[in-house]
Length: 185
Image (cartoon, rainbow, N blue to C red; front, side):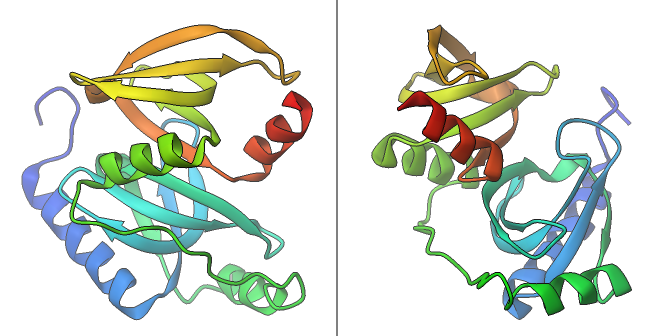
């Protein structure tokens, strides 16, 4: 393995799993050894060679936004578990239904960035070096994203520039971002 990244064969295998999950609209557990998204549950909406797009669900069956995640970070995918059965049973109670995400022919990361810029939504971005910030993606230019930072109290806290190549995770509309939206008003 080069640079602690998974081999091309493992990534290709994971892409096949994501394809199946997307086609079946199956609820799945995604496990990762590193980063903010160490464990999550949701539906795979799209994927490419680098990222997958997840419609997330909380452990108690509530809708929890969209996230863009590196395929390379996934260590294990689980379906049809007792845990997922519990979540499926709770989802109708919380009126958890699928929400629309504009799927296009762009890369998953570019789809997410377009969604954030056009919707002017607060997101959380984690880099491959484990730097995490929240805020509004204002623009994307020449491989860099410009983010107006929002701190944990909902206050504006400067501007950050992050290389697209360094992005490992983006979350939007989750409980964390909704809380920041409320606090920022």
